[in-house]
Amino acid sequence: MSYPGYPPSGGYPTQTGGYPPQPGAYPPQAGGYPPQAGGYPPQAGGYPPQAGGYPPQAGGYPPQAGGYPPQAGGYPPQAGGYPSQQAGGYPQAGGGFPQGGGFPPQAGGYPSMPPAQGQPQGYPGGPAPGQPQGYPGGPAPGQPQGYPGGPAPGQQPMPGYPGGAPATNPSMPGYGGGVPATPYSPAINYFYFSRGYRGVIKDYPGADPLRDVEVLRKAMKGFGTDEAAIIEILGSRSNKQRVPMVAAYKTTYGKDLFHDLKSELTGNFEKLAIAMLQTPAKFDTSQLKEAIAGAGTDEACLIEILSSRSNAEIREINQIYKNEYGKKLEDAIINDTSGHFRRLLVSLCQGNRDEREQVDINMAKQDAQKLYAAGENKVGTDESQFNAILCSRSRPHLRAVFNEYQQMSGRDIVKSICREMSGNVEDGMVAVVKCIRNTPEYFAERLHKSMAGAGTKDRTLIRVMVTRSEVDMLDIRQAYQKTYGKSLYTAISGDTSGDYQKLLLKLCGGSD
Image (cartoon, rainbow, N blue to C red; front, side, top):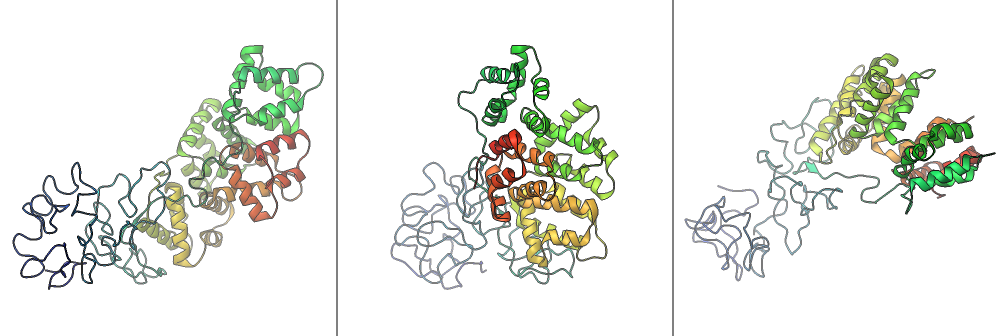
């Protein structure tokens, strides 16, 4: 019987100090491979090991204490030891152990990159964290054995996919490359992975809410208002340092800070100051309420918040909305919207998106095919299929889906949506795609639109500057500069004025 990756009958060429083949060539005769007790790693004296069979018995692979890396004569190989370096030796290219030191992944294995933030360290080319150990280039854990580049287990080959990928529609365009032997890819944050803190507002060293509210009280007491003092306090404290000022102010002076600020400040400066003293979830809830209850529905605001917040944040928003306004956010959305756009918003407000970081490339290909079949490849559009995938899949997975869709169809997913849909549902689907594909770029566009043309959409400008100042404002500034050819700082300076401008520029953090 022949095994993939092993040389044909005739045995291994002998190496000095290596493992001499048994008489009768490979596969070895009784007493040879599979190895006997003491299995892998082999003992000194080379291969084959003695009594005990393969798969290894207790004490075999993985090695016990003192095991990996094994002792002299084991793996990694010593000079002249296993594996053989001669032509025809084990392993062959594509799935075997690498030669010459190191452990770089082979074709079809994991990309060579650091593990996703918060994931345990593993060996390049090794199994996904938390998955059982397998052989490099082998099948995904728990899947039946297949050949690298072959079809996914249980699937039929698809024309146009060398190696065969699962097909949902035979008329779909194919890919130019085969399916990787290992269908899992570690999560990649394409825009700012492992870059540390990307906000611009940081904790102020030694900040004390009691001292801060004393400054605020003096700024508002008596004739006139010291706006500069208010700007300095609010613009130099993080959200978790600003929010306690509300309780500290009432404890110290027996008055409501929001009420006093509203009586002393006016216009957009007042709105910005009030926004900065609320928790993120409380502020988002108030913005959603205004978007639904105001004259007309601010659909872009609903999509912006619900598509960019985490599951935990959306659930907190739902709870606050119910407590504050006596009804569920979902019910408010249903009463104020209709059609497929309503379905999109209801799906997003559940806060049930998959948040796993690992990406299954085969599933990404299948989802790309489903989107193609639901839009470009049929008469009419199946909006429910777009809704199901865009609202339930994880962000890393969807980025992979968008990439696979581009490769498969030759068209960007945003352009396909624009060709197939219209109205609010088109705007909503496009916004979800843009937000997930490149969040800083999406918010840079939101800021640009808020300041473009006649007049400023101050509500959008305030919301984005407040909510992103401690999340990814540095990335938004870079995206703005790259896309629009000028800094966000310059744009804000040219479109706003007075104390409102000064506090916005504090949230911007500087010019690029």
